[in-house]
Amino acid sequence: MGNDRARILEMLKQGKITVDEAEQLLDALGQQPASEPVSAASVVAPSAGTGRKCRFLRVLVKGGSNETVDVRVPMQLLRAGVKLSALIPPEARGKVDCALGEKGINLDLANLSPEMLEDLVESMSELSVNVQGDDGETVRVFCE
Amino acid sequence: MIWPPSILRIRVVGEEKKGVNLWIPLFILWPLIFVAAMLFPVVARLSSKVREETGFVPSLAAGPYLWTAFAATRGMRVEVRADDAHVFVGFL
Image 1: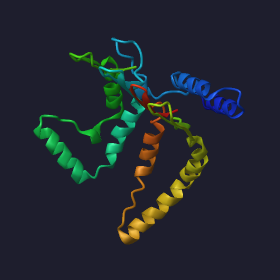
Image 2: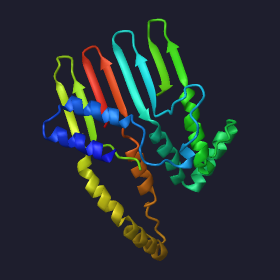
Image 3: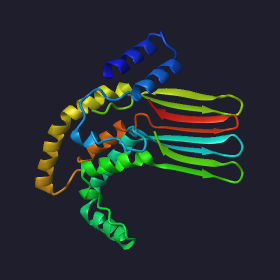
């Protein structure tokens, strides 16, 4: 995949393709499955509901008068964010766990194993939220 | 391995079709980051010596995590349209 990306950038540099074409090619390349071997944790069967692996979390908001917001967040960023929680100092983590416990949430991010994290991300592939307002506003949250 | 984003694209178009379209080549930074990664074990060893002698703990542990988070931004994009105005920020 690295060679393909380098080739596209080289073609862009040489002027053989336009900027928009390069963007489309890089986008298409980003949606291809990784060719390198994957860890056992990531070979969890895709959810039965969709039969595909969730790569991005999309949030689409359409307002009444041609106003749209489109946000695409890679699921890898979610994984990285959870791992970043390991940097929270133990005393602060204890307070966070306490506060969550008071709300009835027993989530210990420090002890979240890679398998559990992968299961959590995989289960999000079935996530789909559709909200429609009275004036034609829509909010959609889904995985793709 | 997760490939980090190679280009940061920022596009801002106003109502009169005037605006900026920036393609920031992040791949230029890759060699610098590679060198930093190569030097990381040396710096980590030095920091452990500092910790032993002074008790000060450098926050080096954040390095790999922040790098992973940066690499994970590839494919992230935010697009906002309102009438003729358009804002796009994307990591390609």
